[in-house]
Length: 485
Ligand code: 4AD
Ligand code: MG
Image (cartoon, rainbow, N blue to C red; front, side):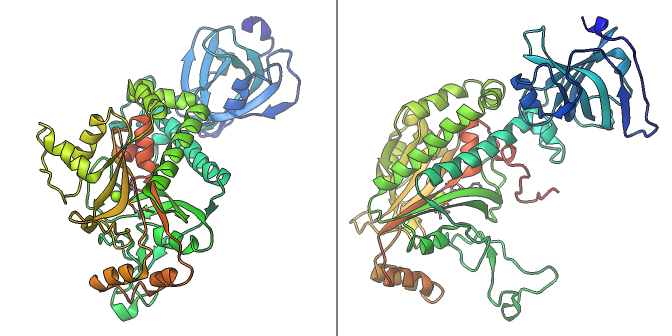
């Protein structure tokens, strides 16, 4: 069929090595004018019969006696568009990895493998690709560990390109989730003079080449990259009862773990007139469910790639998380469960200890491999802002973490200490009452009981996709001893 369509062949070679156009006129029944389409639009099929142009990168080239089959992907979806051309159009520059512009007639494909294909009469190699030097090889399935070594190239692989589309869709879903529920988005600052978590994991910010002597600080005070937008959200929650922020967060954690980054994205929400942890856990669960449902719906092919190839069996875990309601246990119950288990933990557990990843993962398994909220942590484990439960003899704070399969801690939140006397006392104890005078003001002028939480965006992606290493779910990972690009 294709052969018969070719009447006159016209090959035009451009002299430039990096840019070459190969033309072939094919008689077909397309309209003359050409319309530029993304690959995803072409695959939808509504332009069958039209002359179209697509631009993208070659994922494979197969040359047969008369025909050339080229797969082109432009990142708009997982599937490539199959280009069928006369072998006359074959060219040394038309290789795996090269950037091309293809024009031809969009047809229904005779094969079941793809709905449509493009009968090309022009293939323009916009940028050649040295396949010997190119880190990825045609037809090879490279593992995530290998792909991670090429942060500037890994977007060319199917798996990473799917990840980036999912990440983008999840980000959009988070914004629409909050917008639909009447939350106001606040752009909290990246540079700040406070240490919200008080954990000393701050990166200091100064102009390069300047000293960090206190009286010579650029901002006149020591300034840092934010570890959390919470305190700024708390300011705003004094006027807007529902606020959220979603942005980069920085922690100088000297950790090479599979769930820590020095720069990660955090979604944080703050709700005024909130008096119970239950109100917060409802918001956290609702966020997890609605964003996950949207991602599964909008990126089904990309998500399937992870659930089939990267983490087989993970689909069932995700479906169970969506079907079952999340468990709630107190920290005290959690310690009890851990103490009663016969598991040999590296870090022994006693009431008052922080939960380690091994404990969190155990608790998730114990609760049926489903998300579990752990509430009411020891008061001394939580930052100054956490609300004192004023309970005796244990002394806990109204704080909650959400633990999820495969990851452990996904969210951390709390009710905030809204009682001026208690907050003043706690800040004074830490010698911070002057620095946080403005924070005390929030309790002086129309204070309302409030609370909020933060969800690590990368950990969320790890959880729904079953990705073991956090470095594989962020475009450009930053961690100790590594800041590539
Ligand atoms: O539990 P965290 O430290 O809570 C806060 O920062 C609160 N101020 C949030 C709030 O109430 N508004 O951090 C929240 C979440 C963690 O549960 C975890 O998922 C993620 O942020 N996270 C990290 N993700 C990647 N790399 C790191 N180094 C992370 N540290 C925390
Ligand atoms: Mg935490």
